[in-house]
Length: 187
Figure 1: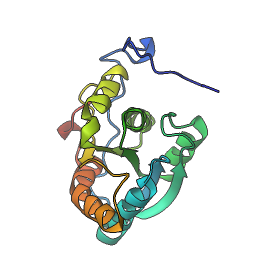
Figure 2 (figure 1 turned 90 degrees about the vertical axis):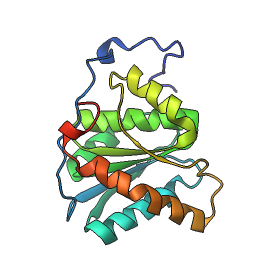
Figure 3 (figure 1 turned 180 degrees about the vertical axis):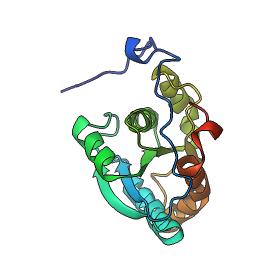
Figure 4 (figure 1 turned 45 degrees about the horizontal axis):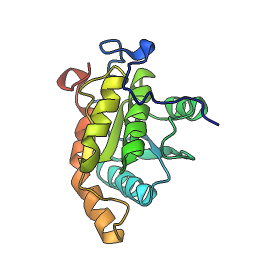
């Protein structure tokens, strides 16, 4: 049932000990016309928020959604097959939504995996779970990994609330996906 487990003691995985984690993938500088991938979990409103973000990227930056995957469980890391598909079909990927402890940790893990595979990723977490997201980034060898935050909670929002969150986080996502790697933490 479990393919991998997160060590609750925080002991680093020898493969991803601090300082050995992946550098960020090179950023495109301009998002116009790029292929956007979406990786979301089954947390309530994750699909609605990520889809609203994608619509704003398309409308404002001319991106085209080229892949959309929903992980079957909120705490599982991205499967090798889905990761390969995102790498093959996307120029940049939005990952979300970290709106609880385990899904925040998993979203950051997925963002780091995409970066290691050469695809710029922007992870969306709710502010209440910064500590969890930061701890996972450190555990995965990428202390200071940069991600976007939205106010907590996301799960209980109505459609108008989802739209407000999407509008509010868009500038940060644009920065995360398009600013040069040298200007970002984790390189």
